[in-house]
Amino acid sequence: MSPARVLHPLGRSWFPAFLLMTLLWGFSFFFIAIALRSFAPSQVAFGRIVIGAVLLLAILAVRRIRPQLSRRQWLDIVVVGITLCAAPFLLNSTAQTYVTSVLAGLLNATMPLFTAIFVAILIPRERSDLRGMLGLLVGFLGIAVLLGVWQVGSASALGAGLILGATACYGFGTTFTRLRLSNTGLPPLVLPALQLASAAVVLVPFVAVAPPPTSLTWGPALALVGLGLGCTGLAYVLFWRVIAIAGATVAASSTYLIPLVSATLGVLALHERLDWYEPVGGVIVLLGVALTQHAACEARTSRPPSTSSARSPAGASRGREPRPAVSGA
Image (tube, rainbow, N blue to C red; front, top):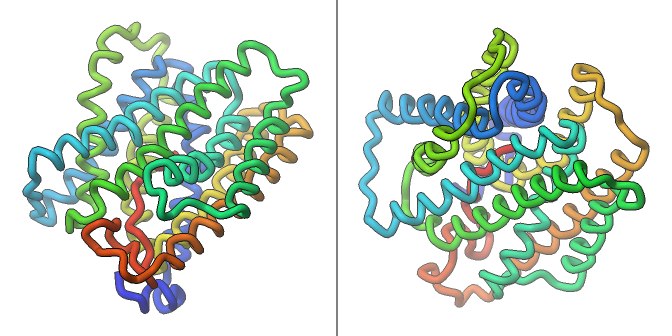
């Protein structure tokens, strides 16, 4: 990515792709809720992954892109496929059998908080300062408010725990990708395509033991197709387009808008209840995320230029943004 693209994001029209990407990821929680009416959680996760993988692999085939990977890179991609796709998609789908799509979407915004924690552990040179630590504290305070810890029940606590487990997977997977797969030189869509393909293989045993779909109707089936084609496949294509035009920071800012989309759909389309403390907690979480991300950006750009590119993630050198992992929602 050239510095000009990062510094002048308005030079090309990135906003339509950004807006559609945000809407698609916001719709994912709505589609999951509909799909769960007929499919088991593992079937929902597996279905969206397979459909998204087919779309991305088809694009690579049309473009005649055939990546050559080492054994180590394949192993790394499997780890990324598990932590960014298989595990979080399965956890999110299971969680929505216990909690509303509104709560699921709001809690999903905590992903950057867990990313900051894993960056501090695995990439110490980018450890945040006191402002970053304050952001983490504010963010986790927001989680407590968001959950209404003073009255949370066992079922909602289990669902919330599963979603937070999913966001923790996203945080680890994102950090691991920066450490292990940022210098591969692969075309942008190769990594998400291969991580989806590997995630599909990992989920086969879970699907094999799941009960067959019950009372299958058009609604859940179409929701699963929309989840795979739109929220998984097409959203990844748009994600990389936004990065290519406007930079990773702009692409990552969708974190602040996805909960708004998911909450609106949950209340208006699914008629879910929205308690007063859920939007309040969501705002506190996003404030914590903003503080954490700002501190992380400063930590990356203020590193001494003597840090060798061999030891740093691609694009993490001074003046450039690191190439991000793809997690989705």
